[in-house]
Length: 372
Ligand code: NDP
Ligand code: GDR
Image (cartoon, rainbow, N blue to C red):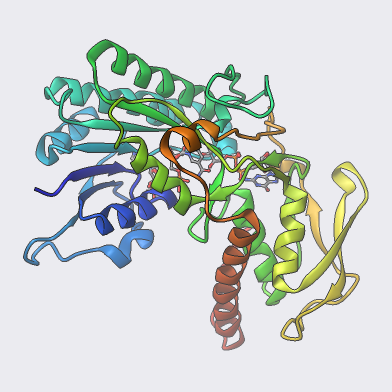
């Protein structure tokens, strides 16, 4: 009998990598996708299977974390061995704009899934993974952060995720559900949403190198993050559900760099040496050398990064650095991809896209370049 997994947020970065990973392990994978006015399955289109095929392994269900009856019906139909709750309004800055919706999806959405497990009597059958976050540490109380570090959330997103963290612990302790939290630090990939800072940077640099944009506008460049690769992190999500006893783990690389350093890394991957100068909102990055003969649309001396205070957050998380020792000691998990390798993969992928867009533009087709 093959195992059955249900993934909320299957159309997102992690959901798509996790679905691939579980399919390779022989699972039957069910994903929840939201109804949208245009296609939103780009990240999973390559694993889509015609449901008319004999013995398909991958299924998509319309659903929403704000809809209790819908979630309960999907769980009843699928009878999953494992539920991965990855669905969320996952953008910290957006959570300040839409705090109530973020709480509904990220906090109460988690409760709805756990209640559905209980209501359907699946407590002994279904294991539950909750996508918790390093944002819980917020205003950092200890460096590096580990499983025992106190939480101090700094955004509506983080506060909602704190509810989700504790309701997961509570349902484990109250009803004996195999439920656990992966406290994941930032993880990225070429599939990262375009408005998170790493992808915004790799995409912006690629667009600049191909003459599609002239300047990248960023917020707080001093922020320090512990950045890993999503592929390493979804492997750990699965490992956490394969233990005898459920437990919460910090997943991180144990290294941190600033947003500014990530910009330098991305520029250098694209063949541009840059230097930062100025302070505060006047800080800029200027090209000092061009190391790639294919780049003809920019010159030495061009300013390609500026600060836009619009991207500052009402409350910022300045520094995050995780201690993944427990995951290493108890599960044998270690990240395999470094931040440099990840940045290189992201820049290459965004350069391919930008080159294609530049070609389209040259031949008279309009190309939308999102600025967020
Ligand atoms: P993404 O933003 O890429 O994906 C989020 C997914 O949730 C998408 O599939 C999205 O659907 C779906 N979603 C959003 N709102 C709803 C809703 N109301 N009902 C159902 N589904 C919804 O996030 P990631 O893949 O990067 O992250 C996965 C999870 O891990 C999230 O919960 C995030 O908060 C958490 N996390 C992420 C970290 C990271 O660094 N990436 C670190 C720590 C935690 P659609 O495609 O239609 O928008
Ligand atoms: P984060 O990721 O808030 O850590 O949440 P994000 O990439 O959005 O920001 C990281 C840091 O970069 C600073 N920053 C900018 N951020 C964005 N998005 N855009 C900018 O222009 C910009 N300039 C500077 C931010 O202020 C911040 O300090 C991510 C999400 O995936 C969450 O879902 C997840 O829980 C956490 O990581 C761990």
